[in-house]
Image (cartoon, rainbow, N blue to C red; front, side, top):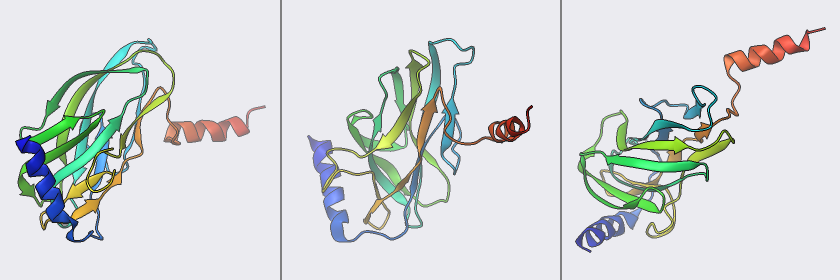
Length: 185
């Protein structure tokens, strides 16, 4: 209960204004990437495989002190162990239902900070996507929110997702393959 009151107080104080510059959240398999396009395939075309997912935040120019979001898991993914960044002093909720996190100190550097690391198990080869989505109970309204270091709540940009068993983006080899197929006789 005490954690809920602290986080609610922090967010209430942040309602003064919305910042123009926005931070960025991304799901990755390790180190973050700015394009946020990550595709995962079974290593041996076997229907059951596992991988490690990382959730990263890039602060805006105004820094980052707290974040609220949820993760949408498809039906063919089983959630495994979750590790929360030890630099987070408070957290409420779960990734699937919505989580609110407060960092120990405000982070100003222009680098990514991870919030969660999770082992996931894929149960079939059907195409699906894991996405960062709105926290349904975020205050004052559902959303993906950063609280920056000057106590202003910001909406943040979010990566397109983590694509399982498909890749909707043209890769160099896929693009070249499409071009070559035009000239086959």
